[in-house]
Length: 230
Image 1 (tube, rainbow, N blue to C red):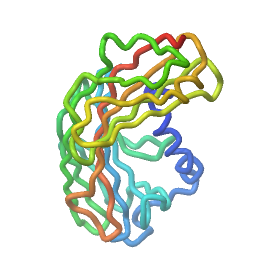
Image 2: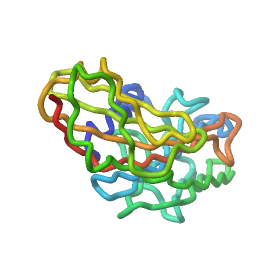
Image 3: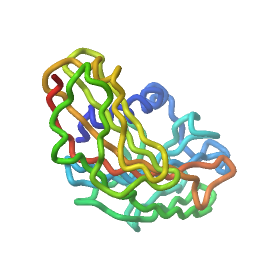
């Protein structure tokens, strides 16, 4: 299973989906040209596994979740995808870092939509990132891996020992190779051993979509690390 903390932002994004999912509809009950497609390729460095995921909603990215029916299907690299009932999406798992693939969705009217996806560049914590010292100002974290490309971003999250002290840090500027950890956020972490995650992300529009649109995104998740907050 996916470590919950490493996917905290995904879980937050899916909270509305969890409440909507009990009222999800079959896809053949809605107008096929108004089905919004979402495709994701996620490499989890802690597990050394890749997840390909697909989800469908009516009208837009916040619309009613849809279960493919009436002959509608979705495949990734030619393999039928498995329905995950709890989170209302389709998924396949692969060992290692899968660099690319193709989602193929056929709707209930027989229209085929083909959308390729490529994994973003790798990223990792440097070996010397072992501690943070509070009340000494901000900290520049230089990651291991290529600089940011246009439209990509890096998210670092650190969870200290206090309740509700999960802090987020981002880098978005093309050419960047570091994330600035702001002093006020470092100071708000509970002292002791903290868990840290780092993700490189990219989201763009679909190659082939209905009039409702959709998105395709890839994410490389560095192996989780632990640091000392002093």
